[in-house]
Image (tube, rainbow, N blue to C red; front, top):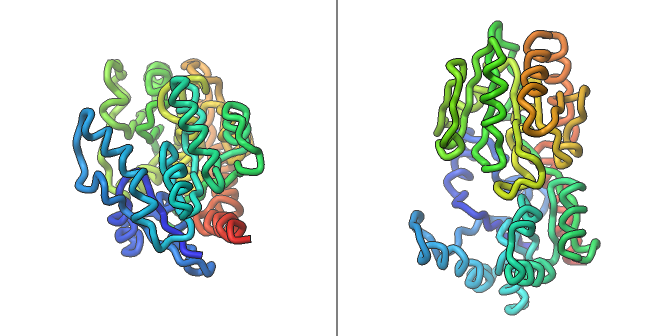
Length: 348
C-alpha cells in the first residue's frame, strides 16, 4: 500500500526539521514511522494554493479548489490520509482512487455551525471516505449521531506525541503556570480571571488573536512564535500546565482543542489542570493524571492550580502518571501502528 499524507498546512519543512532532530514529529500523525511498518508513505503538498498567504474570496476559493484537484495529483497513491474533508473524498470517489481516510480534529464542531446546504455536502463527502478517524470515542459518538454515518465507517485513532522530544525534566525549584495553544476554543478569559486570585506567575503562549479584548493581570506574561526548543523549555520550567477551554457547545475552534498540548505536557511529566471535556477522557483521568475542573469557572480553576502548585507530591504524582500513559499508549510510533492497521484493512 502506498499512502500519501495531505495536511491542511505545509508539512515538508516540519518533516525536515524532525529528521534533523529540531522538531517533534507529533504533527506528522505517525507518517514518518510507517516505513518501518512496511507501508510506503510520503507527504504531498497540494499544487493548487501552493505559495502561501492570501485573503478574501480568491484565497477561500483556492483553499477549497485544491481538494478537487488532489485525486489527480495523487495518481500513484492507494490511500490518502488527510484532515481535508469538504470535497476531497467526493472528488476521489469520482476518480475511483485513491481511497481517502479522513482524520477528524473538529468535524463535529464544523457540523454544528454549518448551514443545511453545507451539512448535506459534508455528509456526502464523509460518506465517500473509506474511513473517518476520530481522536476519541466521545468525538466518534457525537459525529455518528450528528451525521448518521455508518458506524463501521467511523473509528477511533488516538493521537500520539513525540515522547523523545518532549522528555521529562527535573521539577523546577520555583516554576510558573503555563498555558499553551491558539485554537479558538481556548478560554483565556477564564484563565485571566483565575490568575487574579493566584500569587503565582502565569505564562501564556498564544496567538495575539486569542488575547483581543482581554484584560490580563500583572502576573500574566504572554509569548508567541516560540521555536520548538523554546516550547520544550517552557514545559520544563512549568510547575503545572493549564488547559482552559470553552464549553463543549462553543461554536468556534474544534472539539479536539488542547489534545496536542495535553500530550506534550504529559510527555514532559508536568502536572495538568484541564477543563473537563469528554474528548480528554480517553487520555487522562481526574485525580489520577490530571485535575479536571468545570468549564468557564474561574474560582474552580484558581483552586485547582493552587492545589497543584502548593503540593509538590501531588504535582509529581500527576506528572509521572501522565508520562507513563504517554509511553504506554500515546507515542507517535504507537499511533503509526494503529494507523497502519487501518491502512492494511482497506486492502482486505
